[in-house]
Image 1 (cartoon, rainbow, N blue to C red):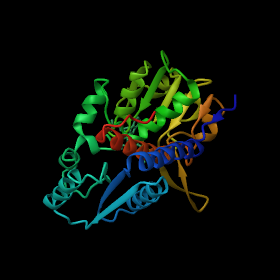
Image 2 (cartoon, helix red, strand yellow; image 1 turned 90 degrees about the vertical axis):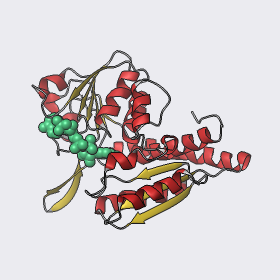
Image 3 (tube, rainbow, N blue to C red; image 1 turned 45 degrees about the vertical axis):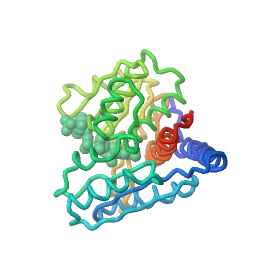
Length: 292
Ligand code: NDP
């Protein structure tokens, strides 16, 4: 079997175009422009790239982008004061604090100081609780993007066996909640899982969110399964720097029914979902119907 490639880049472009249409309508009919504030502390090179591309795409869909770049030695009090200001700013509908933060800052404290209604990353403890109890929440962007691709490919996910490899708060756990919400039978695997190959071989859906280059070989994949590769790993090969996922794409594509590539799979969907979440937050805060 040769897997169908799930084109996250094209799907994300479609989502962004829909968001742009809805933003234009909001401006025209309600005189409201959604605004996203992104806070970057320090000079982590990967974070700088993410923040730049988030800002660019925010503007491209017609939203206002507010970038706040703070020095690496910014105090917790100053960061919390900025978040408080953004919480109270009616022009800001979404707030994202780029992670990881420098070690001297308490990430949980900072994230939980964001107004949950503006928490477009969905990491605030209130949103985590709402998602876990199946209530309306802000859903973390990367797992949301994965779910959208799975729904688009399969229609209903009901009754499917899903394995999520990785149990982080930003990807693995919320991904498992979303799959459970769509009535999958969900297994969460991690570094202590016994016989991971056997666990993965049972799955109709495999979501790999580990951070280890090409860790999942093709012979772990059940024939016809759908593979969503969240991993973004930079490796040196043949003297060049290359981005690879957590799945060995070449061998997995020979067994899977469908697979996301790296790059061009989950990555672009993450930013598209961030913009969609900002639009949702804006509509909710103005008492307007939410976009589909
Ligand atoms: P974390 O490092 O927070 O979590 C990694 C998880 O993988 C942990 O739960 C860990 O288990 C598990 N793990 C580590 N080694 C093994 C192993 N040998 N077998 C099974 N499980 C293992 O990573 P994140 O969740 O933040 O990110 C995962 C990957 O996704 C990274 O490559 C990251 O770059 C990428 N990513 C991509 C995004 C995108 O937009 N496409 C967005 C966010 C992340 P344990 O808990 O036991 O330690």
